[in-house]
Amino acid sequence: MNDSSSSSPVVLDVWCELQCPDCRAALGDLDALRERYGDRLDIRLRHFPLEKHRHAFAAAQAAEEALVQGKGWEYVRAVLDRVEELDRTGEPLLVEVAGELGLDAEEFDTALVDGRHILIVDADQAEGKALKVTGTPTYVIGGERLDGGRSQEGLRARIEEIADRLLAG
Image 1 (tube, rainbow, N blue to C red):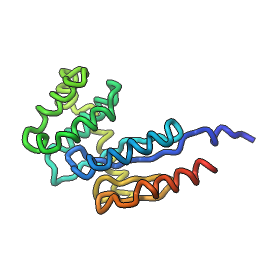
Image 2 (cartoon, rainbow, N blue to C red; image 1 turned 60 degrees about the horizontal axis):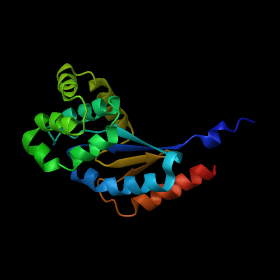
Image 3 (tube, rainbow, N blue to C red; image 1 turned 90 degrees about the vertical axis):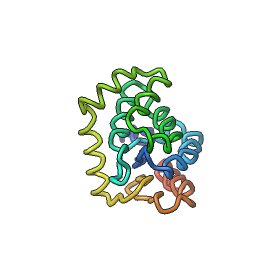
Image 4 (cartoon, rainbow, N blue to C red; image 1 turned 90 degrees about the horizontal axis):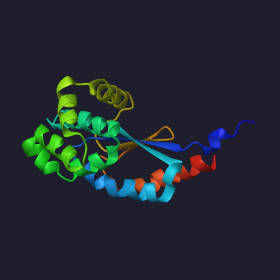
């Protein structure tokens, strides 16, 4: 019997939007989950830019560029920490944050212009819609959708419950 599956991590998809204050609030839960599970939980950033936030689509592309450059979640956190500023200044902030984190800001600027990450963002959004994601953050773990856009109350406990069950296999 092949038991390699027991060592593979449980996947938690986090449908997120970088202009969303609720996603910023969710970072604490994600930190706690990382702390508790380490490598046993694979927390994956999924994009769901909402139309009401005009810089969200560009921010999602920028987050993908940050992943390529090795600082995806660090970048996500830095941008979410400045949601209000992103509302006001838009794309220049996305490039500025990249520079502050020691990433190649020029490459960010180019990536936003040439649209190299648009397909990933579009695919995430399409998958999110298929899963009936309507707001952010929304979590999907073990085939179950948990909507954090309405309320994050009790969500971390629910995620832990599902993760524990899946890890116990």
